[in-house]
Every structure is written in structure tokens, then in C-alpha cells.
Amino acid sequence: MHQAKNVGAPTFWFAVARHRFRGRTTGAMTDARHSGFAPESEGELSRSRVLRRPTVVTTSKLSARRQFFSTVPSFFQNNRARHCAIPPPVVIKLAPHSRAIAKEPHGTQSNVGAPTFMPARETEAIILKTFPLGEADRLVSFFGRNSGRMRGVAAGARRLKNRFGSTLEILSHVQLWYFERETRDLVRIQQCEPLESFNKAQSDHEMNTGLAAVSEIAELVLPEHEASEPMFRLILLTAREIERRGNWLLPLSYFAFWTVRLAGWLPRFDVCATCGKPFGRHVAFQDAFHPGLFGEEHRRHGMKPVSFEARELAERFAKERLDNFDLALGQEPVRELREAGFNWIEHHAERKLGIRELLEAS
Image (tube, rainbow, N blue to C red):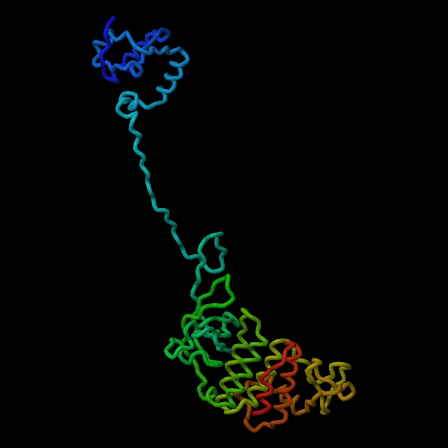
């Protein structure tokens, strides 16, 4: 019997592959891994016949091995002994995932999950009211010429050093920049520049009461986000006349009359609202619970009179500008017309005007 010597592992597998493809795979073949010997050279392979634990390799096993090795790349088949014990290296490529962000035009609906942008807007506005918000901010209600009545937050407006200054005073005429987000009701006010300030009227208590009445009525009557050019010019004209005249008696009556007319609530001043009978030079009556003017036959308890002079003044209000009126007008017709306008505003708005008590006291 020949003595088996050690040969290299690649030589052994080369011999097994040679016998396999020559059709000798049905006989008994030896496995050097179980023999305890390792053949050293290819020349001594023929003498390695005696093995301690022979292993029979059947055709089915060889078919499975052939199928396995056919799927392995040629690189690992030629270098099997060197690379089988070492796992192939794993290369992980990391690429940053970036997404381009573009500004969408206002008014277009963005996709789901896309970032929402706040486009900057600019408008000519009148400051209606301000309220304290938090420790240093203010909640500002303003009426824009192009945007309508809106509310926004002026960050840091209550601090001693702020970028707004006196531009947020009542009925100040300003140029305003703000940021608007579709998912929020309040806008963020970025900057205010004064166009016209009524410092004289704002510093006087009596005239400031008239400005507050204009502000409250505008806040009550004007809808949100609805521009109204006539109402914007009316508020600005009333504030200018209050400061020019030094009192609010005639300007506030003119403002109340035109507010009712622009809102579509102005009744007829020549006939009774119930029967349609002309008033002539007789006194008409009105109250806050019934819209319109009524004659003596349909007068109810609590109604206040509207004289013929007051009705004539209403016709002049409808035809002339406020700055064309003479200062020497009767106070009683002006007061009657103002009270009628206030009552009709409260009736249609279904809310009381809190400023009326201060007006009566002043």
C-alpha cells in the first residue's frame, strides 16, 4: 500500500474536478479532510489511496455541487481555498438625500408634505385697534386698502425700544408689511412706516374719543379680508376732519350716515317705513329696535325724533363732501342724525356700541 502524503488544497480540488468531468464520479473517492493527511504535491496524488474514513460521493451529491459551483463567480472558483474562509468585503455607499426647495406663487395649492412659505405682502393700511399680547407683543387690527380688515401680531411692539414707534396708534395711516400663512388667522407684521399721523387728535382726550368711536364702528361693521375703497377713504377723511375741526360732532355724524349707506342699511327719509305716507315738514321717529323712520301714527314707546332739518342735512351728506360743510351748523340736527345712524348700526350689527357712553359724557 502506498503512503499518502500532504498536497496542497488547490491541487486536491483540481484532481476531484478532473475525475468528476471524466465520468469517474460513481466510484469511491477519498476526502483528504477526513484522512488526517494532507497531500503535498500533485505527483504524489496517485499514491494516496489508503484513507482512514473513505467517503462515497454519489451522483446526486455531485449534481448538487456542480449546480452550486456553476453559480459561484469564476474569481471564487479559481481562488476558492484562499477566499472561502474570508467573507467578501461589504461596501456601503452613503449618498445625501437632497431636495430642491422652490418658492411657490401665492394662491396655488402646495403638495401634501411640501413646506409652506409665507410670502411678504405690502399694503396701505389704517390702524383700528391694538391689544396687549404676552409680555412684549401687540395684537393689531388694521384695515388695508387692498387686503381689508385683518389682524396680526407685532412682535416686540410693547418694548421701550422697538421698530414700530408710534405707527401703531389708533387710526394711524401707515404703509405696512406683513407675512401671511394660509393655515393661520393672524399675520405677522414685519414693518410699519407712517404716511400720516394724527398726533394732535390722539393726544387730546375729547378728539381721541371721536377717533375711538370711528375705530369701534369700523371694527364692528367691516368684514374680514374684504377690501372696501369707499370705506377706507371715509375713515381717513373723518380722522382728518376731527383733527382739523378740533371736535368730533359733525365728522362723526357724517361718518355714521355714510357707514349706514355703504352697508345698505339706509332707509328712506321722506316717507314712513310702515305706511309710506310722506313726512313733509313733520317730525319723524326712529329707535334701535326698528329699522327706518316712522310717522306720528306709528310711533312707539322709546322712539326719538328726527326733525325736518336733520333730514335735510342727511340729503346734503349724500351729495357733498365733509370738508365742504360750514362750521356754523346747528348742533341739534347733527346730534339727531348721529343718534339715528348709531341706532341703525346697532340694530343691524346686533351689538351695542360701548363708546356711546363716553361720547355722551364728553
